[in-house]
Length: 294
Image (cartoon, rainbow, N blue to C red; front, side, top):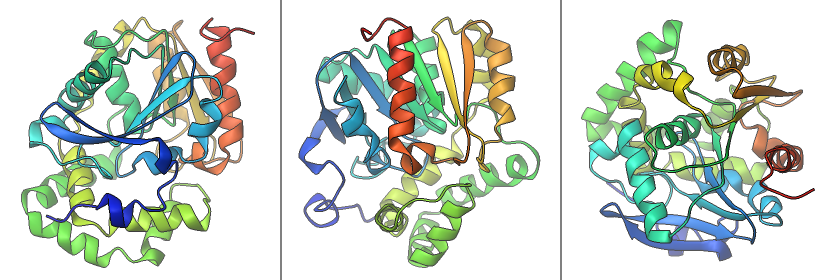
């Protein structure tokens, strides 16, 4: 299985100067760290990598010490044993990484499936943030046809390593752009090129498929009402991947700890479309929580 090479594929990686490679939980992670202030953890979603925070990370680094890892098997982080790709496995692996870094996040910001990993870490008392912010949080099981087809297909693909190669060979830039547009987002040409680079790499594809194949959200949904940490759900109103009304449903089960902030005109990759707008929301929520001073 091929992997992305830092000295070839990472030469123009966003915020490259902030990148580090750290051994933790039995494999090597690619991590970006930048800024000064309260500790803030950024966790990307399935199929993405630290490039997803390219525009947002420097804005947050003006107020926080920000750590953003490539999740296991994604981007430039190594592909671990398969148990590390489940929600509990990924949560514990990430907790080991933070322990090695001596990093204790006061605020966690996750995107899509990254929110589920953050919630699991918090529920299992692996971290103790004062605030969680979910951007288009994917914490509910896929419904309808997606739930019946998407996960079984990912499981089938992951059991056959050849499928990752086939998918990578077929992931030309035009197809990747169609996938991104189908999420309800419009991102710039450079970001599209980076996604194409990821999807054309069989190792990254294997990591994403492995994560999807083991992504059982039912236990997490049952436990979400136990989450005592305040959570703000930031919702792109044009999101076609996670239906915006799911955030209202999730918030209702967690009331009064949860609230919803809608962002008009933005899709699933809201933080990539308009980083300053999303940064303003995070900074304001951190101030309201007393993590940042006025």
